[in-house]
Length: 355
Image (cartoon, rainbow, N blue to C red; front, side, top):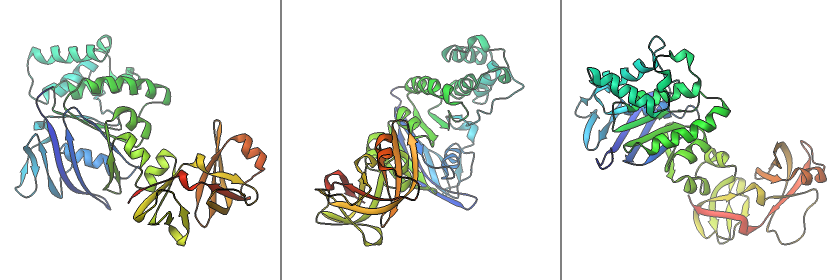
């Protein structure tokens, strides 16, 4: 696959019930891109549209410049004629076929015939470590083994594009960690276009070079995992990475946010901006603090959750915010649900970037 210069470009508009999807996708050869978003964002529908399994309302899909679908010209290349391998969330293995015949089915669907089918199917089972299960039925396999069979079936025809829909979602937590490493290895050995759907930020960060965040059928943010997590552009992304995010207008050292409240921010200049504050930068007090913090607010604790050696406290007030403290500090505060509290954080702990 190396050196063939494959790229996937798509401009997709499609309806999924009440949801209208309007997305542009551009993925280059050798790049692993994760399509990240909450349940119901339209991620799976978009993937199926790229594969030709869902008809476009309007738009265009092209693979290395060759048009696979174009609603303006009426061109449509059937799914089985597209050089695309698809790993479905539930794998969709044929229960009545052996593992070997499941992989062989992927080859036959792409026109491979004769002894070559069995040879290539067996070679792929060897590659994914399942040569000894060739004559087993899918029902006899573990979740991780079924995932590897589905991957082998998708890759055996040597496609130019590999689409994976929540490839680890059907696995238990213990198996998922091991299979994540295994999948990363297989993805690194495939040099075509690789696009996977997930709602798991850890999975996206481990497997992908670039993230595309999708919400309610629309594009929200694109960047490397580090770029997306350090500069979230929606409450959904902020919740995923565990930070407080506000949108407002910067005015010389402060950001005016919802309800007219002002957040002192050392980097604020002017214009529409996002302000991000890590919960660990937010200190809690039972009485109004004294000292240097420029941001001091009063509120009420409405949620307390323990995460290992940290406690996250949601404080409702003029501006809702989450603080993160140690369990010892929480015990010292003697703070319960509904308790009144003061919070503070420094202006230098507020990250500001253009909206």
